[in-house]
Image (cartoon, rainbow, N blue to C red):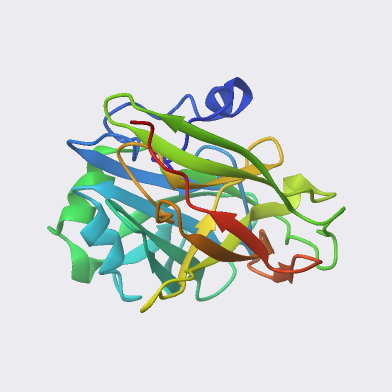
Length: 257
């Protein structure tokens, strides 16, 4: 998300084994592209694609303006509009993409640069990497995804490795995780001049994490500062379902001396 922005449990790593170190966002030196739903899987005809860029690709993703990418099959080429751009705290950015019209179901569609973006960095990356393709399937149903209970703060991890990591887990119980595109997290530090940051965070095994994962930081947390965190589950078609309960308060973890 990334590309890998988080330290993933074994099950999540297995599902994303198609990613290499060079295109995982945790790559501090080069970075690359990552997408969700996972490439080589299914894409609902009314679905959204999350495209993230890390390292050298972060700026290219942040610059997408709705004219740069298409879904291409053997029979059609559909422009992708940009519904949102989320700039991470460090070394990562994200675009939420939607086809301007529903693609035909049962076909293989590839993510490609449009004719106006040929020769640009993102075009060169996608041309070299043939994995960004999905088989289109029936529409994602409405009113299926729900919160099973309130989200709550989980474990805090601080590790002085190379690079160091400091992040907080949040349990995000939803009752149909197969319909989950991600968790939209809005984070505001309670400090003078603190601004709200937004990012669609991928959930693994019912959990998301906020903070630094070493080589990328989608939603950074200031050490020792309390942050207000508002969460919404987002289904495969981009519909937002706000979490029940109060806004979470999350203290930013402090690195070990």
